[in-house]
Length: 233
Image (cartoon, rainbow, N blue to C red; front, side, top):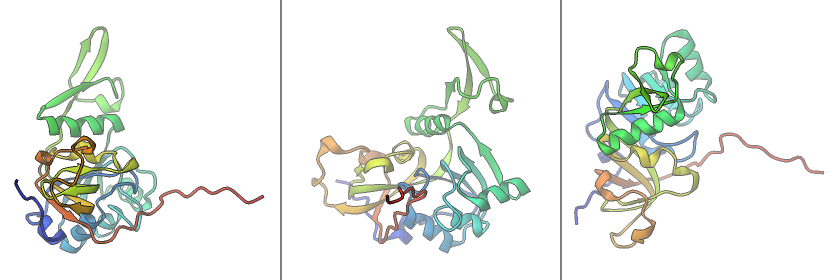
């Protein structure tokens, strides 16, 4: 059995350099690779292109990289909860490619499956389709979208084993599965790293063939992005 376990986040991010394109799983603050992001901040790599649903919040997640001016371009579908993201985008400091959320997911999945591109009806007739090939299928127009090309994909799972098999928990099973195997190197950080053979094969969401490196994270804050409470009577 191939052992894909690495000792720590430092070893997991070996080879990450300036000007690379990175995929980062998560939705809001759910299922984000916290340890990997924190180490990217420490490495100080610059000129990054980051593919992620959003850019975290001002003081957490990808927001930490934005504050350090380490991200040159964001490819995402949502700006909402990050004031610094909005400020850099509106000022022209940050190159932003906003794309429909489903298209973002499918361009990840196309890269994972080895497809060069997909056709999607999302965005046809809007600015999203400008300059792109369009085609009629059965009387409906579709836009050609190319699969992403990334150097590293960083994902976060609940459990994993040394062979790279992964199980996600709850809403953390968002963009993470689609990004596994969608880059040259996929790095998985897990809350619990178990011996090979421990996981029930029927419960595995992503097989280890899509993962090159895996490590157990140290601390997870698991912040609540938007807290809604009911007033007491």
